Length: 136
Image (cartoon, rainbow, N blue to C red; front, side, top):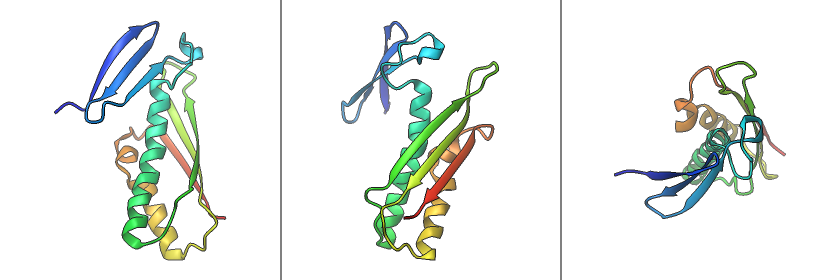
């Protein structure tokens, strides 16, 4: 079964529908690539997917091992190449966990998930992934 149906709306804009839920999202080309930048760009979604995947897998681990990461905040920066072909050069993610006393075991579990979420494993090795975990 298909996952997403996408329609090109013109003016460098698309509308994607998640077929299981019916939820929709719109993308725009970014201003530095002839777009209006009024919505996420496709490459923004790649960077967002990486961060969301990492923290979701951490959430699964937290549920399994009975610790809490609710309120974890991610600040994600996507860096594009400056030379052709245009592509994502690096995704920088700063993760800040809520104030908790995380054990060394929990920290190891969290650090393991950074490198082992499906999106991280799916990105080309040339896309640098710089992820920093901050425990308060």
